[in-house]
Image 1 (cartoon, rainbow, N blue to C red):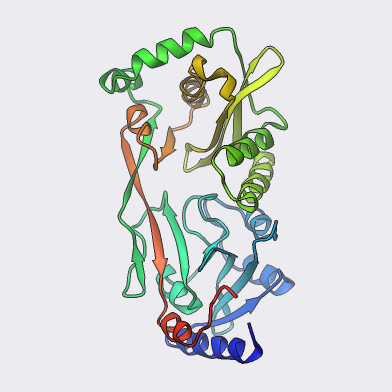
Image 2: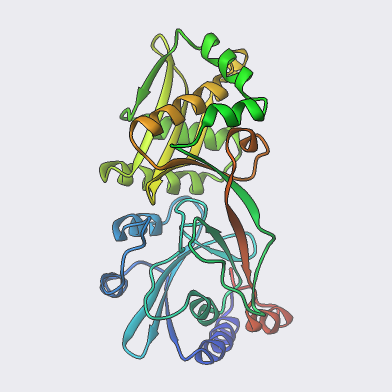
Amino acid sequence: MSGLRRRFTRAVRAVESRLTGLSIAEFSEWSRVLDDALAQLPELSSCTHDVYRTLAVPRGDVRKKFVLVTRGDTPAAVVALRSGRDCWEPVTTWIVPGIPFPHAGVAVRDILHAIALPLTVAWWRCSAPPPASRRIVAGPPEPTYRLPAAFDAEAHWRASSLWADIEKARRRCAAFRVVTDEPGANAWVIRNWGRAWNVAPPHVEDTLAAAELRTTLGTYHNLTVYDGDRRIAGATHLTDGGDLVGQAMYRDADYERASLGTFVIDRVFAWCVAQRFSGLDFGGSAAYKERWAPAGGQKYTVNVMPLSERVARRAGVSFTD
C-alpha cells in the first residue's frame, strides 16, 4: 500500500472510531504496551491471557496485527487479528469458543465499530446472541449438537438409527488399544486433520500451539487408537464450561472398513462420562452429528462491514494490504 493510501486508510478509520467515543492504536508486532493493557482486562472464560498471546504469534505467511481499544486512558479491548482473503478475523476464530477477544467496560458491538475494519467473527458457545447493527450482520444460525453426560445416549442412538453402527464399530475395533492424553498425540491428530481437510497450515499451527499450551493447563485432551504399535486414529478436545468440546479428529484411511470414526466418537463420549464432564459438544457443520446428539446450541459467522470500507474501496484501498 502506498504512503498516501495508508494515510487515507488511517484517516477514514479514525473518523469512524471517534464516533464510538473510543480510540484505537494499531500495532504490527506484539509489544509491552499490549501486555500492560491485557493485564488490566479479565481473562476470557475459555482462553487465558497466555493462550491468547500464543495465538497472537505470527506463523507461516499469514499476517497478524493488534488493535488496542481504549476509552480515555483505560483499556477496553486487546484485539489480535489475522489476515484473511479479503478481511481480517480474530486469532481465536474457530480455535477458542466464546467471546473472541478480551475486553471490559465496553460492549463487543462498540469495539467492533471502533476497530472499523472488515472482519469475519466466529460466534459459538456464547451466552448471548451475536452483536448486531447496520454494520454488524450475522449469517443464519447453524445448529450445534451436544450430548449431555447424564442423557440416555443409547436411546437417542437407537432413535437416530445409529446404534447398530456403534455396535458394529465396537466389534470391529475390539482388538484395538485406546490411549488418552498421550504426549505427542495432539500434533499427530491436528496436523493429519489439517491435511485431510485442507485446513490452511497457519491455522493448523495456531490450533496446535494453543492445544499444547492448554494441555499443560489441563484444559485440552486427546484420545488415540492403536493397532498394535501403529497409531491409526485420534481426536482432540478442549474443555469449556464443564463440557468437552470437539476440535480435531483423524482416522487412517487404510482402516476405513473398521468403522474407526464411529469407534473414536463412541470412546470419546465414554471417556467424557468417566471424567465427569457435563457433556460432549460435537459442534455443527456436518449432518452426521445430528445422529449422535440432540441440538444443543447455535453458532454464527458474523460479518462486520464498517462504513469506511465502502469509502476506501471506492478509492481503491484494501484494508488487508
